[in-house]
Length: 204
Image (cartoon, rainbow, N blue to C red; front, side):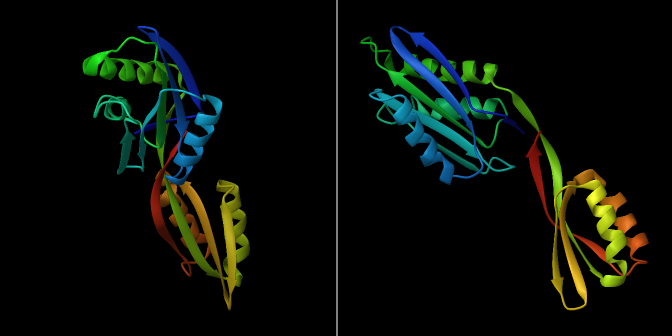
């Protein structure tokens, strides 16, 4: 799946109504409310603030809101455009300033869809890259060589001391697991074992 690199804003006018689409990169559902508050402050007195968002590496969380527009004429079309573009971890908010001409259900669906499409065209799309969060527990004898190696392949290394062992937790590209496993075995003389905690995607 894909995501977006940064907030993107596009503004279109349809039959005197103004539709402003704001795309936000998302990390959690908690950030949705903050984003909506920010938008309502930046664009006060709008007629509607409709939105759709998708979260998760497998797009497992999907939500939408018509915010007073007729049912399924705003939030759902917004969400569908995100899905058609294979996007996740994205919030799309469409702010509408009513221009006095009613669009009807079909017109609203087309207008909200068009607003999101234009914003996606302007956005910087990022591709999913599979990563793995891993850990290695080792004794102090092998720690020096392992630590030097881990810091040479990733900037994301933490360590925790416990009794006779040190546990290194680190993030690497998924494709590196086999090579790193071999090096861990070699540097520890097979006294240590790489364990994958979880697989995850990053959008680069």
